[in-house]
Length: 174
Length: 283
Image 1 (tube, rainbow over the protein chains, first blue to last red):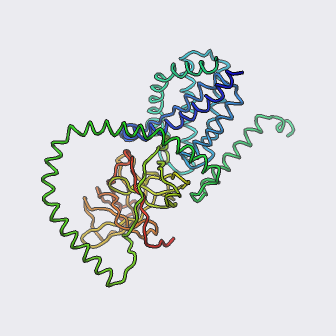
Image 2: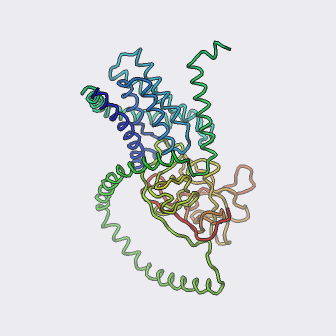
Image 3: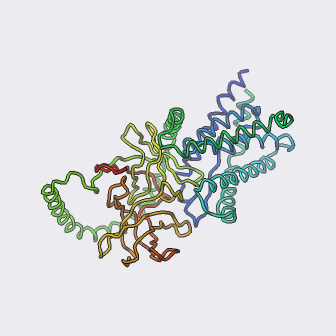
């Protein structure tokens, strides 16, 4: 019982810090992330954290977290509700479906992160295109946004995977 | 039909899609003052964000000052040579200011378009997904921020306030390709007098702002300074936006288009200044 109590407090805190650190990274390193010849790298630590945690927490609870933090992300960063609030639960759903068929080792988890990020960026591109916030075409989007973003998050994944996994396991066990 | 309705997953999907589209429509038509739940959520997040961003900022500033030390000698020489000219300009400026004050008194002008109040703020975070270029600043309605205020960074205009919470606010940069919010009434002071136009759009490839609807009767040249004209109803006049880099006819050939190199760096914004004009707005 006490172990559950621990992860129930720890998981939202971790997701929340992921959300804040994303914003902080993009503020401090905006020159490196956004200025280089039109290429845009989007830090998505929160997605990495959501995917990793959903290996240890039951699905329905994770989807609730997804909705809550999607709302927060929308309201705090974007100002338009209804974008991330839909995408975060979708990612958690896809992850739990993939989890059932794939054997969880670092490489497959990395693949899950990749698949989810690609889906997320595609949906976001489509939504913002419909809403009229961007005019770039699909090819430019793939080359200038999707590729660099995946690369950056691959680096994040390599750096943060083991420490994150260790802490999450620690919190679920004791 | 019954079988369709009994499919629970499909129903949930349908309902959530409808709810999300409704939420998008609702928040797009909003006026920048979000409902209470959102305001509370934003402010809690902003407060925690401030706790994180302050130590980071101290560190970044420290590293930067170390880097600056390297160039100090060269800069010092350059500044010394410039400072001699500055004294003359200062005296002239003082005279002009006095003249201006007297003339205003004679004309009984209360507030001209170029008078404004300043409120300083620190940037807490930036929208990571960069589709809509937004930054969150640690000043809100308690500090007197209202929707629509112009925002300056170190050198020039960078955007306007689009959402206000009690202790934080959201600023949309003029680099966003949003037809509704990113227009700025601008003017260029050339030798034929003031030329007006509208800053509308941002060229991603060359990182320049596009100024549209300039009359073809005047010839603008590279290096002319672009300022806000104050005729948009919200921003005061003579805030620097940038310098003209290239002028050409627009696609219809009816008016000129100027490409403007922005005066402030949109990718390195840490401290901002909110500009509140003292003259009553028309809007």
